[in-house]
Amino acid sequence: MASKAERGGMMAGTIFMVLGVILGAMGAHALEKSLTPAALDSFETAVRYQIYHGLALLILARYKSFNKTILYLFIGGVILFSGSIYLLTTDELMSVSLSALGPVTPIGGMLLIIGWIVLFINILREKSANRG
Image 1: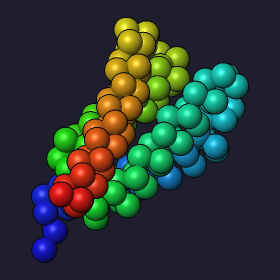
Image 2: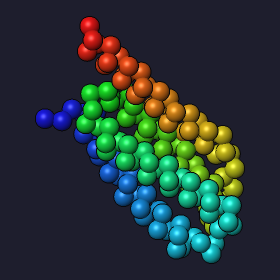
Image 3: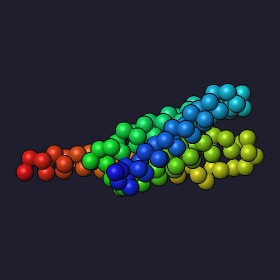
């Protein structure tokens, strides 16, 4: 029986993957003519990071070192990092200025980095516990 963290990781990973494919296709086709090359590049970066972390959640959810802390850091990180980039790159299309979201992007990136550090620490602890 899957733990709550496992189930949550699998569900979040799947949702991130589905939305990543949809947003990636949207960026490649619908937004290609509407965004500047720099904005399109940023949009693609957001999709890439969302896909990477969706895959990571799907894979890591089955491992002992994975826990709710990592799950929440990855979910929050993807939402803040990729989500803010999606909004910042398409704000002109919506005729609204979302420049205040600029500081949110690095916070999301930091949450993703912390999630990977927590995973690394968990792996070290797990290895130490298996020795002793």
